[in-house]
Amino acid sequence: MSSVDISIYKRPEELLQNLIRFDTTNPPGNEAPLMEYIDSLLTAAGFETTFLAKDPARPNLVTHLKGRGEAPPLLLYGHADVVTAANQNWTYPPFEGRIADGYVWGRGALDMKCGLAMMVASLLRAKDENLQPAGDVIFGAMCDEETGGAYGAKFLVREHMDIFKDVKYAISEFGGYTMYIDNKKFYLIQVAEKHHCSAEITFHGPSGHGSVPIKDSAMYKMGKALVELNDKKLPVHISDVTEKMINIIASHISEPESTYFKQLLNPKKTNEMLEIIKDKTGNFFDPLLHNTVNAIMVKGGERINVVPGEVTLYLDGRILPILNDNDLRDELINVIGHDCDIKITNYEQAKADADLSLFDMLSDILKGKEPDCIPIPIIISASTDARLLAKLGIQTYGYLPIDLPDGFSFMSSVHAADERIPVKSLYSGTDAIYEAIKRYRG
Ligand SMILES: [Zn+2]
Image (cartoon, rainbow, N blue to C red; front, top):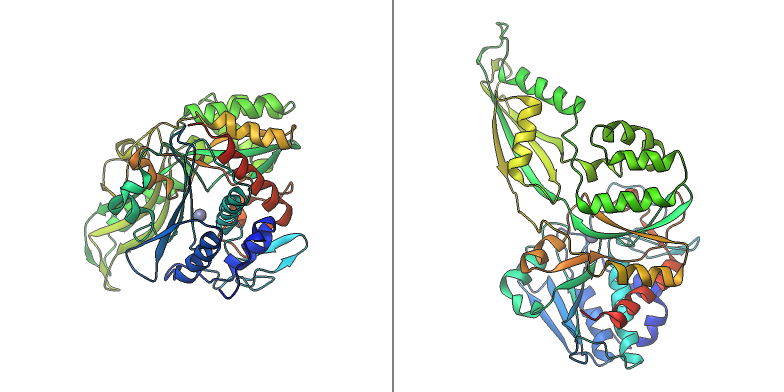
């Protein structure tokens, strides 16, 4: 950079625009130029930085804000890569970082260059105001979250775990945004996430010549299984976090919605209530109360005139944090029966219990700014780098406060065309993260 203006922290929307303009579509990621830009800001402000890279084109950047040594370190981390914007219809070019209608538009505006902008702005402000927090703040700008973290969090956790020494709590994505129910404004603070798990189900049956009708072939068995999976839900499970979330929501909304929400917690009524509240909340609550699977790929048959004796169905499974892969296998058998082989692949058990110790502090920060808002803890249905940090015993809070207007769905906007964030929410979000750094006591 020819000139580095660290007062940019006072204009987080400009910081975000600059981040969006680095095309970090992953694959290939190519996060290095963006990392160098963040590095230029941090070093100009007096931070010492370290690059840690498995591949020089894909570095991670780590720095520290020195604390008073009175609390364990707090970790702030975020990923710099984004998913593709190809084949999507955007109003403005996805890597232009345009400001229009009160929003910053662009790929990564929500997921999660906004978070990097908030974190970097908070650090620059802390330096400018000589803030010395109770404990060190460790900041990690990471690459490669969107394809699993092999060059990012996975690499750091495996090869450089010393940088996370003594860290118990972290702030990162994929929560903090608002959702309206019954005209009440809720901030969703992520405290846990579902575990990703793939399953391969192989069906066997008679094979033979395509000219002869063959009943109960592998192909038909798979068809029956797909129909069952489409028609039936896996069983209801109510975790402590979800129970707390639903109770808080129910106590703030009016009737009859309040009763509908309370009855979500009665497993005999859950599915019926989900149907009722669907009009207003979409599918948001369903995956928080069930393990889920989606049929993704099929392999079977090679010749146009040969009935295959074996067909394999590939499922994308998502398991609630309180359960594991064996539970999912049992639930699948209950739906599709035993006449198949179920193989669980790609399952990484993550942390089971959420540690809610920081929830009240993070809620108070939001309520201090907006007394009428209602923070709630949530499990998210997707998975993030938090699952990898959890292996070191680190509890991540998805806490990038984003004040979205009523009707704007965060989950429908990430990874989609016209991803954008209200400019004003970058100011309140940055303030909230700065406040968290200031208040954190371990
Ligand atoms: Zn993300």
